Length: 244
Image 1 (spheres, one colour):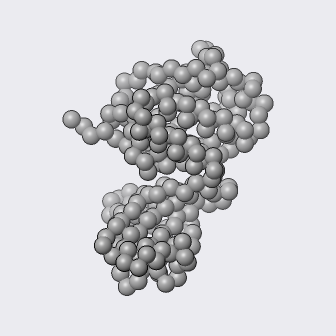
Image 2: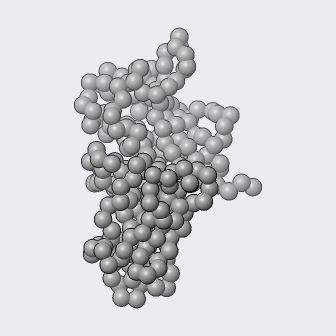
Image 3: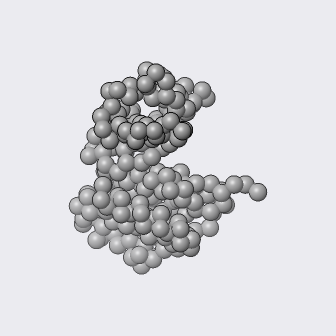
């Protein structure tokens, strides 16, 4: 039996008119796309992944089709031959949505995303994860911090976290080091990423040596390609960190 996969990605599309091809596509033809909507979907998916959120079975992608012809707020699960994806149709009033400001459209898409997530799960623990992420996003917005990897030994704990385009700027990563014997906890300055997804391959292994936290990229071909613009392995001197 294949293991249940943890969520990877959420994408928002729109349903086109019957005489249009393809039948659905990226936002812009029916619904005006907020500038940062893709980043919001990425934040939600990656923060849910931190909680171990699953869509069930082999599915690790959620696709949401906005439909101007369905009743606003109506949600319908769509049948797909690809069991790696769950797809839902979400009713949305085109006139109301397109009249909103960019920020309000982005907020409405976040609301639709959380509604769709609740619709595809009947697990109370997973619904608690949705509630937690929704609250965190409402509180932090674009500065929402996401944990990518944690390494814990008897001596130390290292947390590698990142932010996706905080306040409209570039994506950044942070390293936090906790001395498990003394309780001292320090944090690096933000480390600039060319793309937020780079951190997934840049952080293949985490080690602590000579008072430095060292991130070594994965040795795969994809990892080598992503790491090429960076000076690797990436080292964070613990003595240069500040109190967390």
